[in-house]
Length: 224
Image 1 (spheres, rainbow, N blue to C red):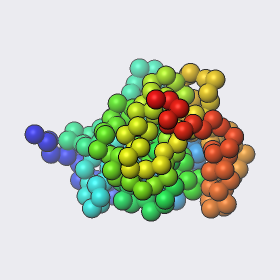
Image 2: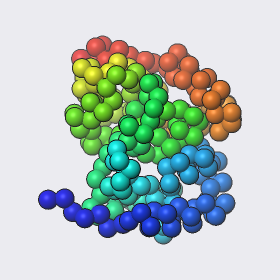
Image 3: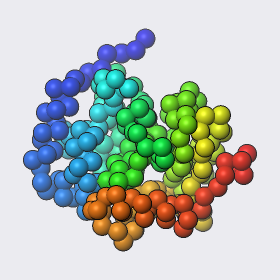
Protein backbone atom coordinates (compact mmCIF):
# COMPACT_ATOMS: atom_id res chain seq x y z
CA UNK A 1 0.00 0.00 0.00
CA UNK A 2 1.36 3.38 -1.06
CA UNK A 3 2.09 5.80 1.75
CA UNK A 4 0.87 9.38 1.67
CA UNK A 5 3.48 11.91 0.61
CA UNK A 6 4.43 14.02 3.61
CA UNK A 7 5.12 17.23 1.63
CA UNK A 8 2.87 19.34 -0.57
CA UNK A 9 2.99 21.87 -3.39
CA UNK A 10 2.98 24.83 -0.97
CA UNK A 11 6.08 23.33 0.67
CA UNK A 12 7.78 23.04 -2.72
CA UNK A 13 6.99 26.65 -3.57
CA UNK A 14 8.16 27.93 -0.18
CA UNK A 15 11.49 26.15 -0.46
CA UNK A 16 11.85 27.27 -4.08
CA UNK A 17 11.35 30.90 -3.02
CA UNK A 18 14.07 30.51 -0.39
CA UNK A 19 16.56 29.28 -2.95
CA UNK A 20 15.76 32.06 -5.40
CA UNK A 21 16.83 34.71 -2.91
CA UNK A 22 19.92 32.84 -1.69
CA UNK A 23 22.35 34.28 -4.23
CA UNK A 24 25.39 32.90 -2.41
CA UNK A 25 24.08 29.32 -2.62
CA UNK A 26 23.01 29.75 -6.25
CA UNK A 27 26.47 31.05 -7.08
CA UNK A 28 28.18 28.12 -5.41
CA UNK A 29 25.92 25.59 -7.15
CA UNK A 30 26.74 27.24 -10.46
CA UNK A 31 30.50 27.33 -9.88
CA UNK A 32 30.95 23.92 -8.27
CA UNK A 33 28.14 21.83 -9.73
CA UNK A 34 27.52 23.56 -13.05
CA UNK A 35 23.86 24.24 -12.29
CA UNK A 36 22.19 27.15 -14.06
CA UNK A 37 19.64 29.44 -12.45
CA UNK A 38 17.19 28.98 -15.33
CA UNK A 39 17.29 25.21 -14.92
CA UNK A 40 16.94 25.41 -11.15
CA UNK A 41 13.78 27.46 -11.66
CA UNK A 42 12.48 25.13 -14.39
CA UNK A 43 12.79 22.16 -12.04
CA UNK A 44 11.45 24.08 -9.01
CA UNK A 45 14.52 23.38 -6.92
CA UNK A 46 14.49 24.76 -3.39
CA UNK A 47 16.44 24.71 -0.15
CA UNK A 48 15.39 23.32 3.22
CA UNK A 49 17.61 22.72 6.23
CA UNK A 50 20.80 22.82 4.19
CA UNK A 51 19.62 20.44 1.49
CA UNK A 52 18.46 21.11 -2.06
CA UNK A 53 14.86 20.04 -2.56
CA UNK A 54 13.98 18.38 -5.87
CA UNK A 55 10.28 17.77 -6.54
CA UNK A 56 9.22 14.71 -8.53
CA UNK A 57 6.10 15.00 -10.70
CA UNK A 58 4.11 12.57 -12.80
CA UNK A 59 2.87 12.99 -16.37
CA UNK A 60 0.02 15.22 -15.13
CA UNK A 61 2.40 17.46 -13.13
CA UNK A 62 1.10 16.07 -9.84
CA UNK A 63 3.62 16.01 -7.01
CA UNK A 64 4.50 12.37 -6.28
CA UNK A 65 7.79 12.73 -4.46
CA UNK A 66 10.45 15.00 -3.05
CA UNK A 67 14.20 14.48 -2.85
CA UNK A 68 16.56 16.26 -0.48
CA UNK A 69 20.07 16.48 -1.93
CA UNK A 70 23.29 17.48 -0.17
CA UNK A 71 25.80 18.65 -2.82
CA UNK A 72 28.66 18.71 -0.31
CA UNK A 73 28.06 15.86 2.16
CA UNK A 74 30.23 15.23 5.18
CA UNK A 75 31.87 11.84 5.62
CA UNK A 76 29.24 9.15 6.09
CA UNK A 77 26.37 11.50 5.25
CA UNK A 78 24.00 10.36 2.47
CA UNK A 79 23.85 12.66 -0.54
CA UNK A 80 20.22 11.96 -1.34
CA UNK A 81 17.18 11.39 0.84
CA UNK A 82 13.55 10.99 -0.17
CA UNK A 83 10.63 12.41 1.76
CA UNK A 84 8.33 9.80 3.31
CA UNK A 85 5.76 8.55 0.82
CA UNK A 86 7.82 9.54 -2.23
CA UNK A 87 7.64 7.66 -5.51
CA UNK A 88 10.80 7.51 -7.61
CA UNK A 89 10.38 8.29 -11.29
CA UNK A 90 12.38 9.40 -14.31
CA UNK A 91 12.95 13.13 -13.85
CA UNK A 92 11.71 15.19 -15.50
CA UNK A 93 8.91 12.90 -16.59
CA UNK A 94 9.53 11.94 -20.25
CA UNK A 95 6.26 13.54 -21.31
CA UNK A 96 7.69 16.90 -20.17
CA UNK A 97 10.76 16.60 -22.46
CA UNK A 98 9.81 17.22 -26.12
CA UNK A 99 13.21 16.51 -27.65
CA UNK A 100 13.58 13.47 -29.90
CA UNK A 101 17.19 13.08 -28.76
CA UNK A 102 17.44 12.41 -25.04
CA UNK A 103 20.29 11.74 -22.62
CA UNK A 104 19.33 9.20 -19.97
CA UNK A 105 21.76 9.93 -17.14
CA UNK A 106 22.56 8.51 -13.72
CA UNK A 107 21.03 10.60 -10.96
CA UNK A 108 19.23 13.91 -10.64
CA UNK A 109 22.40 16.03 -10.06
CA UNK A 110 23.87 14.95 -13.41
CA UNK A 111 20.54 15.71 -15.08
CA UNK A 112 20.49 19.22 -13.60
CA UNK A 113 24.05 19.89 -14.75
CA UNK A 114 23.27 18.62 -18.25
CA UNK A 115 20.04 20.61 -18.61
CA UNK A 116 21.93 23.68 -17.41
CA UNK A 117 24.02 23.31 -20.57
CA UNK A 118 20.90 23.03 -22.72
CA UNK A 119 21.14 19.23 -23.04
CA UNK A 120 17.81 17.31 -23.05
CA UNK A 121 18.62 15.06 -20.09
CA UNK A 122 16.35 12.81 -18.06
CA UNK A 123 17.55 11.32 -14.77
CA UNK A 124 17.43 7.70 -13.74
CA UNK A 125 16.83 7.93 -9.96
CA UNK A 126 19.68 5.65 -8.95
CA UNK A 127 21.12 2.59 -10.65
CA UNK A 128 18.94 0.11 -8.80
CA UNK A 129 15.74 2.04 -9.54
CA UNK A 130 15.40 1.26 -13.27
CA UNK A 131 12.06 -0.34 -14.11
CA UNK A 132 11.66 -2.27 -17.36
CA UNK A 133 8.26 -0.72 -18.11
CA UNK A 134 9.86 2.75 -18.17
CA UNK A 135 11.27 1.85 -21.59
CA UNK A 136 7.83 2.46 -23.06
CA UNK A 137 7.91 6.06 -21.81
CA UNK A 138 10.93 6.66 -24.05
CA UNK A 139 9.45 5.01 -27.15
CA UNK A 140 10.38 6.43 -30.54
CA UNK A 141 13.35 8.46 -29.31
CA UNK A 142 17.08 8.49 -29.86
CA UNK A 143 18.53 7.72 -26.42
CA UNK A 144 22.11 8.17 -25.26
CA UNK A 145 22.60 6.23 -22.02
CA UNK A 146 25.23 7.85 -19.78
CA UNK A 147 25.91 6.11 -16.49
CA UNK A 148 28.91 6.59 -14.18
CA UNK A 149 32.28 5.10 -15.11
CA UNK A 150 32.30 1.99 -12.94
CA UNK A 151 31.31 -1.66 -13.21
CA UNK A 152 27.83 -1.16 -11.76
CA UNK A 153 27.08 1.80 -14.03
CA UNK A 154 28.18 -0.08 -17.13
CA UNK A 155 26.14 -3.15 -16.20
CA UNK A 156 22.98 -1.10 -15.67
CA UNK A 157 23.57 0.79 -18.93
CA UNK A 158 23.66 -2.53 -20.77
CA UNK A 159 20.45 -3.66 -19.07
CA UNK A 160 18.63 -0.42 -19.93
CA UNK A 161 19.79 -0.66 -23.54
CA UNK A 162 18.35 -4.17 -23.81
CA UNK A 163 15.03 -3.03 -22.36
CA UNK A 164 14.92 -0.04 -24.74
CA UNK A 165 15.70 -2.12 -27.82
CA UNK A 166 12.04 -2.82 -28.59
CA UNK A 167 10.98 0.81 -28.25
CA UNK A 168 13.80 3.23 -29.06
CA UNK A 169 17.21 3.59 -30.66
CA UNK A 170 19.69 3.47 -27.78
CA UNK A 171 23.43 4.09 -27.62
CA UNK A 172 25.62 3.60 -24.57
CA UNK A 173 28.07 6.45 -24.00
CA UNK A 174 31.06 5.62 -21.79
CA UNK A 175 32.56 8.92 -20.67
CA UNK A 176 35.83 7.36 -19.49
CA UNK A 177 36.38 3.79 -20.69
CA UNK A 178 39.70 3.50 -18.85
CA UNK A 179 38.29 4.60 -15.49
CA UNK A 180 36.40 2.65 -12.84
CA UNK A 181 36.06 5.28 -10.11
CA UNK A 182 32.54 6.63 -10.61
CA UNK A 183 33.57 9.53 -12.87
CA UNK A 184 30.27 10.99 -14.00
CA UNK A 185 28.60 13.40 -16.41
CA UNK A 186 28.92 16.33 -14.02
CA UNK A 187 32.67 15.72 -13.84
CA UNK A 188 32.84 15.62 -17.63
CA UNK A 189 30.77 18.76 -18.11
CA UNK A 190 32.81 20.74 -15.59
CA UNK A 191 35.95 19.90 -17.57
CA UNK A 192 34.56 21.34 -20.80
CA UNK A 193 35.67 24.82 -21.81
CA UNK A 194 32.30 26.06 -23.04
CA UNK A 195 30.51 28.70 -20.95
CA UNK A 196 28.38 26.94 -18.35
CA UNK A 197 25.05 28.35 -19.43
CA UNK A 198 25.34 30.79 -22.35
CA UNK A 199 24.53 30.57 -25.16
CA UNK A 200 22.58 27.44 -24.28
CA UNK A 201 21.55 26.30 -27.76
CA UNK A 202 24.95 26.65 -29.42
CA UNK A 203 26.69 25.15 -26.42
CA UNK A 204 24.30 22.21 -26.34
CA UNK A 205 24.93 21.46 -30.01
CA UNK A 206 28.69 21.44 -29.46
CA UNK A 207 28.41 19.25 -26.35
CA UNK A 208 26.15 16.75 -28.10
CA UNK A 209 28.69 16.53 -30.91
CA UNK A 210 31.45 15.92 -28.36
CA UNK A 211 29.42 13.22 -26.63
CA UNK A 212 28.80 11.38 -29.87
CA UNK A 213 32.34 11.79 -31.21
CA UNK A 214 35.01 12.28 -28.59
CA UNK A 215 33.95 9.72 -25.98
CA UNK A 216 33.34 6.02 -26.40
CA UNK A 217 29.88 5.27 -27.80
CA UNK A 218 28.76 1.68 -28.14
CA UNK A 219 25.91 0.00 -29.94
CA UNK A 220 24.03 -1.91 -27.20
CA UNK A 221 24.34 -5.09 -29.27
CA UNK A 222 28.07 -5.02 -28.59
CA UNK A 223 27.56 -5.52 -24.85
CA UNK A 224 25.09 -8.39 -24.98
